[in-house]
Amino acid sequence: MNKYSTIFKLAALLCAAGCSSTVNLRTEPASSALEVHPTAIADSKPVAVVTGPWKDGGDNGIVVRTQHYVLRLSLRDETFRDRLPDFMETCFVAYASALGTIPVPNDALEMYVFGERGLWEKWTRKKLGRDAEIYIGLGKGGYTTDSVSVLYDIGRFDTQTIAAHEGWHQFSQQALQHPLPTWLEEGIACYMEGTRLSRDGGPSTFRPWRNFERWSQLREALRSDDLIPLGELLDGTPQEFLKDGKDSLLTYYAQVWALVQFLRDGENGKYRENFSQLIQDASTGKLAGRLASSKAIVGKVGRHRAVELRTGNAVILEYFNSDFANFVDEFNNFVVAITARGAGDRIFRGEFPLKPAALTAPVANPTPAVAPVADQPGVEIKSR
Image 1 (spheres, helix red, strand yellow):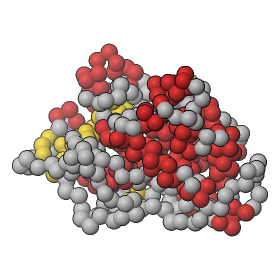
Image 2: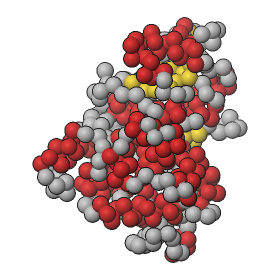
Image 3: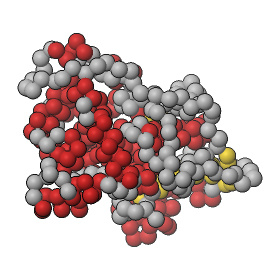
Image 4: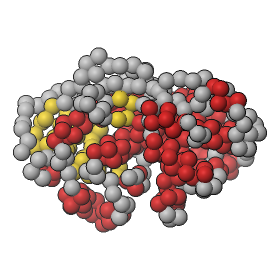
């Protein structure tokens, strides 16, 4: 059972089986971690074994077991279905190592991907009863609850994107002892959308900057002066922004995606080490204690709120910058810089979008100036 309360995810607004002998699924003990640096390339292809049919998935439903997953798949595109296990294992490597080494869950993660919405709705009603209509009304794509992701086919690209996104939620619900703030949880899920299937049948790769959809939404929101003020962004939830319309929700996701990129690569990487420490504290159960004793968060009520709620700027104050106004200026300048002319080509290639020379040019609201950021290639993980 998930250690967090049951939650549903709004990321869905993005956008005859054989049988083998039983496979021994190797899992990692909770005290160990998948020690793969995000630039590493694994030497061997992950093993995926079909263990039987999946009745609820229809005529072509199968159950596939890999090192870290039990996947129930009934995708109509059999090529995509056959490649999805490799894709999810690549995602798993990214989840466990891209933002700091995290001890991996003891149990295999479960994901359902139905070939059609009707089967997804039927299964959801059977399993969730009276709560089913909440999930069914979300829109297209699927949801994650109690560490299980339940999706349906919305096209190859969109399905892999939501699988990568929801896969982080189920991983974090199992791997982290303390939940992250909502804005950070959703931002990391968007960051993990950089996992991609290759077009030529090669191994899946993880390039976190390669998210042209989030970047485009960020750029358009900036140009139309529709960006959400950072304080409001941190205080809100996806459900609340959805009430203002789909565009508002998509802008929320684009900004939390950019915020995670900023914490990792912005300001010449000055927040990266603290970001890794935050992830470690969440995974080891130290996050709440640090917030409760923080000197950067004003007052007992403020510290209590920081522990009890998953919104607000408390984590920013404690881990990154006690001067929130300065942090806001840094982030705003970063958003302007990464959406400037010419950055889109690099985003499309999955590369860090800022050139050192470009950072010396004036940008809108240039005080304080954006610190020079060293150019660097996109992070890449290959699954074999």
